[in-house]
Image (cartoon, rainbow, N blue to C red; front, top):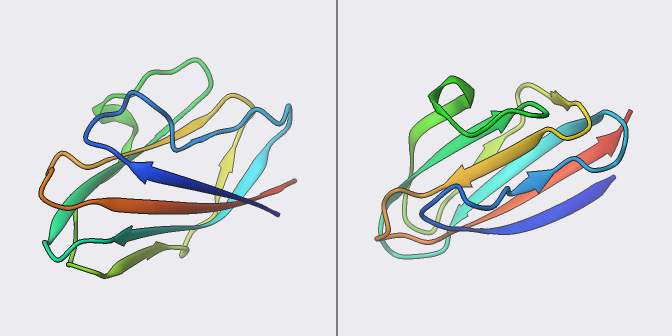
Length: 106
């Protein structure tokens, strides 16, 4: 099992997770924590190998996370092919978020 920590920014320039293992991995859980006293929103994208960030790859749109709260994505496991990426962006700059992504090779 591997853990990736990511400081969420306002854009999608950098992937929160990039599968460079050479094999498929399963995402077991994603924690997104609002570290501020302001409510804020995040968008989450899962982009296949060779794809680019766009609305067709968005799995969470404008997800509201209350101040100093954590949202947990764990009800469905994501299987990522080699080269697939997860992007997390906060279009609302009034809050700051950290993400922790847990993966395991399959």
